[in-house]
Image (cartoon, rainbow, N blue to C red; front, side):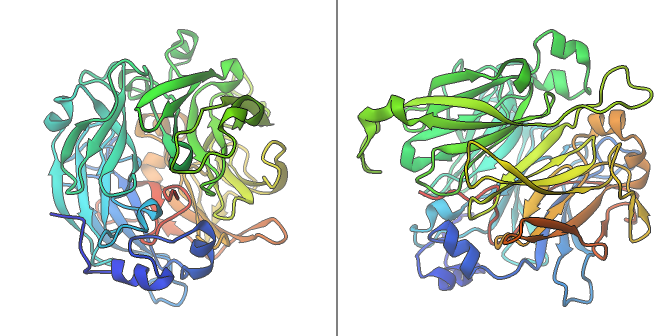
Length: 480
């Protein structure tokens, strides 16, 4: 199997923007030239439930003019049970828009619990099919396990963050797949980092950032506060030299930065600003390059080596804990996912425990301004049901339309964590919901007519996790 082909829907993408490869020439082109999303690919989970079935990739109809709007129209079952599908991504994105013949066609879907990696061909968008399975033993050969984030560096191939070694302990690292989506080897040298989780790269600045969760043996059984006290959960950001594959600087976020999860650079390839959600501390940090410290690199072009500056991180949003009967401490908001709109104007996120979807104006990156929020689900959300469906958990994974006008979310975090904090979701299943966004006014409005119910499937209730669009999205596209 080769990802270099001129067949399929990749050709349609070329017509959109006049460049040779997948995606869009610029973030603004993605906003202006993209068509409204009609298909969503959503991870569905039976791992950790009472249903004896494999996890699956759901095809969801999000076309309001369709007769099956808001329904799961197809499911691609994984070949083996117990994968715990988590995050997934594409074989190509806008970083390769100049690569002729490369197309965004294959979804790379890791099993975080099994370390199995499944490749799905979406040439037929409505009915994708599995074309390759990388078994765990191929991953363990490189002393890695627990795959998480999938990114597609320019030129073909895939890079995956791995959270543990072959035994589920530390250290983690990164695995590379070649352009045929076969295991190429380990990207990093062992010992550069201990903990790993998410990552993002800005090729024009020769920088990659990675965050920390914990070892698989720590987080997979569920959350234990004693593990936090024993310093088994992360609180650091690592800034890498992208070309040299080495860590050049580590920033310790301290007690206010416990469990930094999703790292998001602004989409502009010129940007050296971004954000990370410290989930357990319920804070959002702004990270940036200190321009005073990088004066030697001023004027360097994107093709020349840059003298790296000093990277810093400052807390810019703080979500206060809330009292709840039965808890011996204030309930943390637990912001579990964030994303940045394609125009770099708004930061969106979800507070899983509190039950809140929010947006901040980040026109001034160092001083986010709260714009709006929807209080829904979780322990404190005002909205407790949609279309008569009672909500069993708070908003968790978020995804935004390319034009920034529709925000979608699902409600499952991780099977064992779900069982601890929202055990009823095992019996009821997840939902996928949506809010309409007015970027001009900075408002969020719950769409009370949109609901995808993962609790009514024939095999039984399922959990829903990450969302992807066929034409790229705000959490996977990179520009160079």
